[in-house]
Length: 211
Ligand code: TYD
Image (cartoon, rainbow, N blue to C red; front, side, top):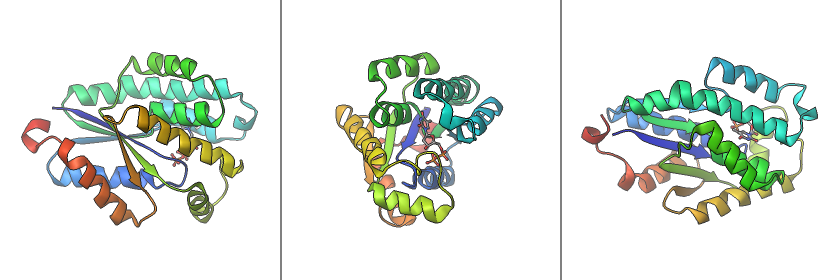
């Protein structure tokens, strides 16, 4: 039985660390795990990532940015995620469709119906079974990303933006509670990981089912 798990959260929430820790833990249990990240995860996607995080990006319109994220996602779904799921693996994705809804929708105000349609086109409707949002106060997240070195596109913008994105994730989680797991990300990486495993455990396949 394959399983598609996505990780979401604001910049500096620690979700990438948590995605990696969960992948390692599932591998130790004997599962086959494929990890992806967005934007990126394929040659084309990594090229798009360079564009998105590069000097030309601040001039891009929100719609143009959305389409770049979506092009990276379309490639990732076709080249990596679907084949891995078809082969029975567990896929753990660091960001997926909900990043677009939270950042471009709740954060930047693009029409959410339009974004859902774009997400659908990019993914062919492939939805995750479980989405973990690593939830953290924007101020804590921002101080973490500053410590990590250098402002990125959103660090340079206001705390209000990060708050909208965070609230967006929480609103999305509320509308689909059967898919979402909300985890407090303010503890140490080990503490947050333990909480994720505790909440996920009842929904993880047994080794026999997943292989
Ligand atoms: P990245 O350095 O990967 O951030 P993180 O480590 O926090 O994931 O940069 C990705 C940035 O792109 C991040 O600020 C979120 C943003 N993003 C969107 O705005 N929309 C999207 O659909 C995706 C996938 C990412």
